[in-house]
Length: 256
Ligand SMILES: [Zn+2]
Image 1: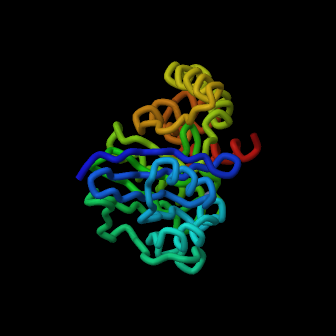
Image 2 (image 1 turned 90 degrees about the vertical axis):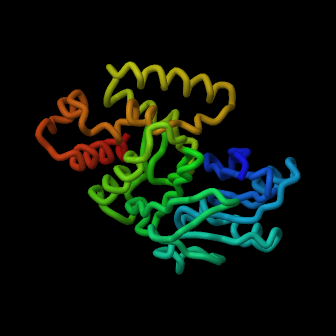
Image 3 (image 1 turned 30 degrees about the vertical axis):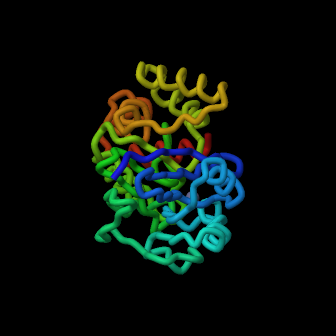
């Protein structure tokens, strides 16, 4: 089992597909499939064939490429059991109790509902990386479309409980926009200021802001910091449970 070569493929306006290539077996997997043409081009450029697709949730900007990629490469398609009826082309469904691996690398499935009710997150414990789809973003989190704020907070807490050195890959390049909101919530945060400077430089150079790490996110992402006294005081929620602080932050971001 070799270390993965990892490629972030920009798709559509601001989506990412992540390609994982294991050089010993020659196998390649894609996390989400926003756009077949962009993914095929990235694979062809490297001489890779696609063996597996792992889908986080049913939204079209994560699934539109499945049919063409499956037909072209004969790739298997794995996705959440709870959304099997909404994701065309699945060949395997998963839940939190599924034993899953790719190229002999273990994958733990986390059920992370809220953005959608069946959303799953893929955690590779031996590779220190997690693919959070539209649940947790760098400096932000996904909108709560199908679930409720409390559910989303529980899901985000599952991700936050993973080892701090875990590399975070998410479904969108929203970091700069998220940074502007985060600075309205906790402008005193030195770690946040440093991350914003880094993110601005990366985007100015046309580079992805991912991966981040969970340690960086816990120090900078307001949605992982409802325990912060400064945030609580700013929102007037000093005595509230964490999930209510989270819920207020999400409401404010929706209006930002
Ligand atoms: Zn989505």
